[in-house]
Image: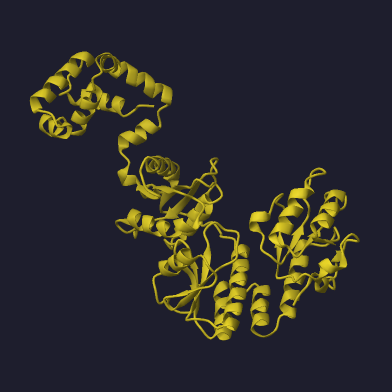
Amino acid sequence: MTTVKTLLGLPGLRPHPSTREELLERPVTRIYVTELPDPGRYLTAGELVLSGLLWWRAPGDAEPFVAALATGGAAALAASGADAGGIPEDLVDACARHGVALLEVPPDLSFAVVTERVVLALAAAADGARKRLLTAAAEDAPLADLLARAVDELGAACWVVSGVPRVVAGTAPLPVAAAEPVRQFAAARSRPTAAGGLTVLPVEGRHSVPWLLAVDGPLSAAQTELAEELAGLVGLARARARPVPAPLGGAVRAVALRTPDTDEAEDVLTEFLATTGKPVTPTANRDPSVALALVADDGSWPDGWADQAVAALSTVEPLLRATRILAGVSDAVPAAESRGAFEVARHALSLAADRDGGVVVVPAAEVGVHQLLLAGTSTDLRAALRGRLLGPLLDYDAEQHSDLVHTVRVFLECSGSPTRAAKALHIHVNTLRYRIGRAAELLGVDLADFEAQVDVYLALVSDP
């Protein structure tokens, strides 16, 4: 077992004089580097927390940081005070008060070197299968190689499955649909979860969309312990990975996705678009609640893709903090026209927000051209045009407590057919003709004229 005291044998790490001896006996399971002022939501028990104290600005800043470490069960804090003129006194006091071991890191020692030394120390302290898996992780082995080594140790096939769902990596074909391990875990919310011939464990990580480790068959206590170790290492591999944006040419589609929790949107979109198997380029957006990306379209997008997207996002939705996932997708356009594609995707997203359901995906085909044209018009201009064209009708309805505006809209949406409009409004066709005639008098237009119909309809749907 690796303890804080074990790590003191590494060059560059030394205990602060204020640290009590018994705190150095705490076991260390992994290392976590952070500069967040409150890292509590990301901590797991047994972590050696490494920080350059960039979050510290003034006395008092240390209290919430150290309190989060204590609550999260951190093994120790290794701090470098290079940018703070040494380790602040309030940090020393807070660590002593909360019982958190404080280690000093020399300012000239790179955190990358410390991380490497700690990972290697954890590997050296392990034995047998655990040692071999830790060594693979320390060597930054690809995820597929890490799973392949795990198969030798576990004696069973294993897979990493994303909550979207998709199979991220595996050592054999997954015997069930990728959604099954996700549903299994979502239903039980325990670790590990055994059902349907698979044992499913959550992968450690600080991502909104979880990854899961699925192992073939029920596991013994020793196998379960090793699988849990593997799940932690997969989490480290995921954290190290940095997706490389793909420069896109040819045809592309724009996708806009929104979740109520602004921290989730980008992660959900990234994981979701990975299911397409197509090159993706994330795009910066001023609104943090909306994630944007371009996706290559080689002509193989299936019909009914929006329904498939809803099914995929509905699988992961129970595992998120978000209560709704909304998405809009543009048509395929040349990459040079991506700016317009983003406008279409954003407008499709706004339509999704007006629909019911926990997961709503609106493709560009459901966005009317008139809606896109109106979306580019200012609110003041739309209000002015609506008042100019519909003013007499709006005033009449207000005075008479009637609803001629609604009658005219239904009439126009029925392509000017009195029979269809009367049926939709549940009135006699002669009543419909009378109302349309009265509305035409008030508006001063012929509602049988196509251009007049277009003008009036645009005014009707441009309510700001």
